[in-house]
Length: 292
Length: 253
Image (tube, chains in turn red, blue):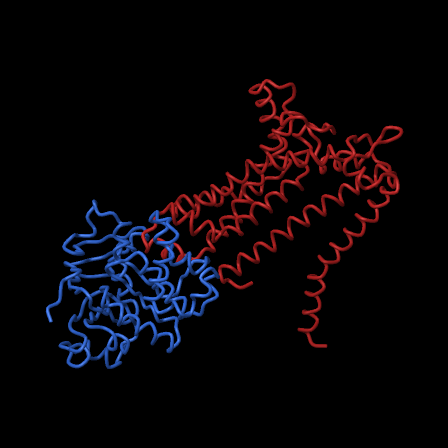
């Protein structure tokens, strides 16, 4: 066996190891999670209104947790989509080289701040501020979580949207200007539609980021496992539930299994998001004639 | 035959930052003629042609001195509406650049951004423009299919149709055949010959045979300077400068 053969094999093993991890994690998740459905029916699990895992008898309805995730994610989207796409448009269409030179790294640094720092900032600064400003009983609410999470997801949305915009060939813009379109028309009728699927990918991945985020929502969302009636109430998203309760759940108990089942659902949701993003972005590259 | 003046350059200088790309260029472009601009790579041909529709303004840090008159009006005067100018002076680019939209939308784009919404009128203009661009027969059955499914030569004729739809007076061609095969090139050349009956045409080309075949006037540019400008016949048979002769006989370039 030649030396290059050995090298090839080593790298192949390294490359396939992530596949192994993926499969391993999936198996463990399902093996530990699925048995809960012997105790609760899947529909009752998904749509049950009460999450009292430690009561006797316990209630394993995760609807409040799903809604918690949904509210916070939807709120985060309201923040990160305009912010992210707006900054991508600014960076790509309007900013001069100087503004770009410091804005781009600044946005990237925002992405590298650990989530616990965001959570801490949310707890100590944003929550008390909102509590006073809006005159609500607690500051740790779905709204607070949405704001912080939205800011956290902004760099993801911005950098992917910016890539999508910069992939739009300059020649499209020139062609548009050459028949007498102005800047705004060119942006709305040519650049944005051409970058459209790339921008949708950005939004979906931002969403995926928001759904999966744990530490921040654990710290700033308030943690009440009840169905929220408004944005300004505490919620407990799925991720926060797992993080908060896994430590006290007895291994192999129904509570433990239920937490794994929540993990399964999260896994499936983000999987769907990521596959959708991949399909759309592949179509985008084909549409612009960039091949795969 | 008396030729009518359409565009006149008066001592034009052009700079990218501090670097001068065009030096003291003056010449005249006549109505319903094909004017070719030839010269070695980097001589400023593309820079020059992009002055006629102020396309160079999209590049930051550029500066122009001198005057370019279109029907006597200096197009670089502040009161000139650049959008209006670009409707009068259309452009076809080096690489075919149809939008990732349908054939119909591509051709009607210039009218649509102009605020025209009347479907019948748009359909009529699209058909007329595609016919003028010698593309109608090939695409009439699939107007609502993506323009990107067309071949390179068809895409370039589509881009010509897109330029024609807004009824320009002048059409600029920036090396329109450099990405096309010989058959497609021939079609575009025939088309340009026919288009000059209605339009004034300026074409940049790297291909001297092409200039000789299709143009009435030829400008030879080198290192940003206009070396010689004359009737194409004259330039290609008895150029007055040695360097022009060296270039067209292929001694450099």
